[in-house]
Image (tube, rainbow, N blue to C red; front, side, top):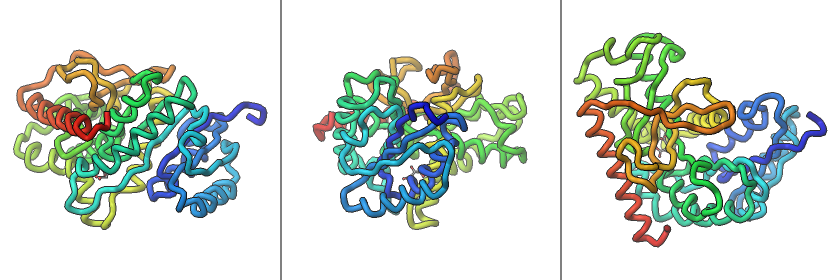
Length: 330
Ligand code: LMR
């Protein structure tokens, strides 16, 4: 690996709690594998530079074989220069009593600036994953300000919801999470999201046929998954960090290395399929091929209940889109 040029990975919000987990995992090779050398670009506000220097020192002290070197800085154009991956984690986190959409105005302006900077200086093949909330609409803002980067190279994180949905389903059927496949999150990363267990499988068999309990679905499973972020905030006093880092890492790993046919959930640019209006970033089940291109799973037929839930979440995305238009963010 010594003579190979490293892959450049920028992480925003690099002085934050989510990044503290994420940075070490990426540096250890957990994102791009043991044979890919990485260069980390840690971006955060000027006031955090001393903290970032400390993080860079710790990263070097791990002597990870896959870590080439670490750069720190507060200027987006410098930190995004030539990057192949941008993990946009930065953003004001949600506090108790807030919805993710309450963050729209504060965080939206940041994503406009970051989209512009990526457009100017990122590598042509850059993949941009938005974790900062409200992730779907922040992703739409960043992509709108990066017209030279294909919109398929942007995605927003619904992997955390996906993993939450898998865990709850496994628990209900008393199986290990490895038995659960074909899970999918539809819509927005918000309390309106729809985890589709009608098409999920457990040990290769349809999950819903093994449960068939609308009361549990409506009153337990759906609210449990959808409100998990708020429940964690109420327990910890701050929003999820290690699980958000793990989901960010898993999402980017799968988007780069492929899913070998398995479904994962990604919020991707809409093209009108499944009746979702164009111009949004909406969560769908996707597979990712070995070249790192995602493909929305086609031909899924929803029952009336699922379709109504998905439409509600899509309608929320449309409203957020209207809000960012009226705020002048796109
Ligand atoms: C989560 O889902 O836990 C995160 O998006 C944080 C939040 O605000 O809910």
